[in-house]
Length: 410
Image (cartoon, rainbow, N blue to C red):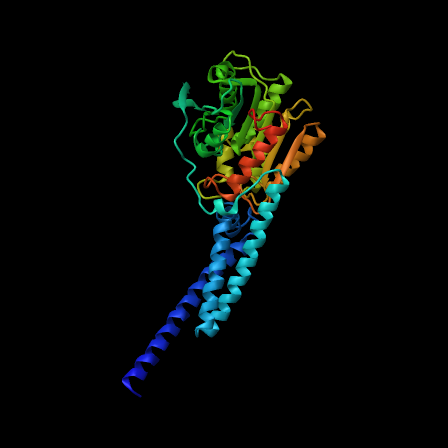
């Protein structure tokens, strides 16, 4: 064999090895995506695999679908250019992962549109941080038990002086979180004409249970907002109360109790009654979370509830009753939207569905939106994500239906 022939043969062998590697890389990536797809059908309250898988789709679903499609192309080239065995395995895995990703993303998109929201899949490929420029102002409301309680203010960008008011309560298991952790969302609402206030409340610490203190802080913050909203161009008569997770519990409890006239402000001020309540994955049933929530390392439900209540909930039934949202159900409650991710492992999805059923029986005008293949904080990992777009647009639709949209958006 001549030197030229040897060179050609060696080049062909090198190309086959290259395509073999490409096919194997495609196979590995597709296998990882398939593991995520499979984990999505397992119980997120009982499996770390399921909990992690469920947490990915509303943030990285479009990216995983795109990756699977790229793997189809790569494995096809690998098969065509000599990596026959590896290529057919990689192509099979890529097709399966693409089908799984496509089905899951399509279900999320369909559920969003069915709930009156909207998403842009191309835009969802470009994730953005949840922290942007921060609030326009931050005011210190008080300092209690060594914790500074502040209100972040996002000024409405509108040409009128009677903007609808939004009061937001952050989550964090009553142990952590801040009033600017969803900064990008709060700015999104302000840019569209809402005057947004996001408030702090006392978080439980060692030797400081806040099961009653957090609610007091929310009452004082709501009273402050009622007194000062007009000065920022807002109309407190058009108030919506929003909350996520632990904040969802506090939002429902405050709004429902205020509507019944059961609240007395520890700050001595008149308390506003919200016209609407919008919550996500709310901690409405503490015992359901305590017994069935998945034990995320460092964020175990049992640890969170014991810290908040000051001990085992079964030793303090009166405290459990005080923080349970069931205790505040009545037909006087404001119109309520609950967005519940179906794969929530921390706040079991069934506990939220059950609460919504009992709220309807009590006469509450309540809407439950179930988001498939979504987990706890499905909307908070990145701005512009699939879940983040769903949360914002569904919320805006509900507010418009309640007459709480800014001028020009009704």
